[in-house]
Image (cartoon, rainbow, N blue to C red):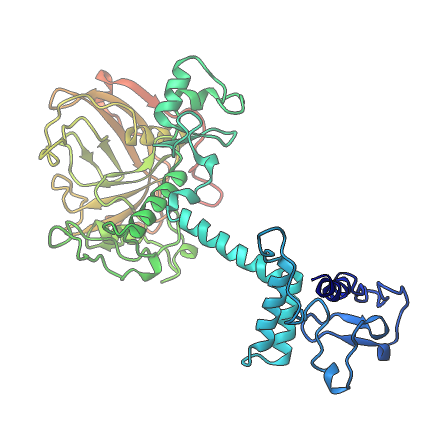
Length: 486
């Protein structure tokens, strides 16, 4: 037994006392002898492509052919007759270096790869790029899984600063923070006039009359729509046709509830003016004909009239904004109080009728009219002297100046006075005195020139009128006596 142990001892000693072997560093210097060998004195491992100093190897390759398939000591397997020493009762665990060697061997064994592709994969493996790409892929996959809810894509800064949810009817303060309308009104109702998040002062106008952020509403709506599509919910289609894709005539779609033009959509807009354009429509805004909208031009219906910009609303008789003024009106015989004398007419404002339910065509006055909304727009045009386009409809049966059919553009008028009086039905109505002041002659005259300044007509109903408004000073649409035009 002693003799057998003695025979085993030298072999174990040789294993433990084997020669230490190290490769060359990045500068080509051997890490064992600290010398810099020449290219002829180095050999490269076929697995890890690491240079080694031949003189410092314990077992250098014996033949020239073996150098082409040489594995360095780090990549070569231990001899089969030398078992790996265990640690205690447990086998050696797999180390990262052994995993790296196994991966490199798998690359070398892949016959589908070229030498260049193998070298590229080895380089990516040694630099850690392959593992990082895999980790990034897994992270992106997990992120995508978590981000299936499209609402998560909306930045948390969009959330209401109070309830921390996506704002319902969002209000955005000048400092850029968002609130639900109810949350904002509750905050202001407590006497707070600063932003709940950054303490910036909220303007008094916004505090008293907050405006809903329509852009944010659209963003939230589209996010919710995308979520319903992902979850397989019913798809809601929003139909919109760009102006250049619209037909030349008004048209009906499959969504129309009634036949004819009751549910028709407007055709292409032929002029390039904005909807709040004041005054006549010149030739430069008429790319189709290069002549503009001329006095006396007629159209079949309100939809065609809209296409040429004379009067944009389909139904309403007044086109305007309460703060900016009115751009156009249509005379269609809506009120018995109206009077039409061609060069001037008395026009009744809108409102005062109950149009709820099935009473949308009611002509009975049920309450007083006020100078608000469209009526206020006409009042602003009166005070500023803005030009108002006037279109007459064949529906005006009490006027000698109405066209026989369709609608006709009759030129520019100014509102000289406005007031309120008790109408025929016993409720107060807003009244306006329109006087023609166009550079072109009226369709019913044979004059060769436009309107000249004329004295205002005497209006008998002004004696009992209230809230009389009359322009003081100049007008934005005045007659120039030198040029003979406005």
